[in-house]
Image (cartoon, rainbow, N blue to C red; front, side):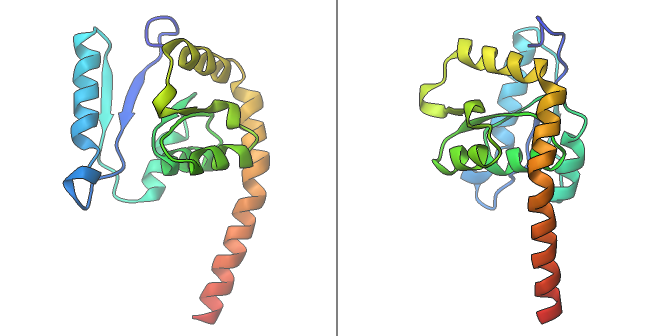
Length: 155
């Protein structure tokens, strides 16, 4: 993607613990280093303090490749096309809810060629996918906001 499409690569890290095995920063730093060694410039963003910052950072992206389900959800909040590398069954469910299960790959069966093909599809169909995502996410947002309002009234 970086060479064929001149894509700007940003590695986002939004999980910082609370335990060392749940801190994604070391892996993110290794990835940025490996990309640099391969001659691909990449930026690391590991400074999020809340979900809104992540959602806002993902909004301008043409494509989000995610390994965390919540990263995909945050991307969908801004109608960003997502290629989700799932490591738990719930990832497929989230993608299926939006009619995008085709773009969820099992981490144990990843193939470079398939990832490249799907990333190309997502980039080529970007505007149509953004519309589809927004159309499916908006009713969910309204429902979540209504539930939140109901909970506030009860508390």
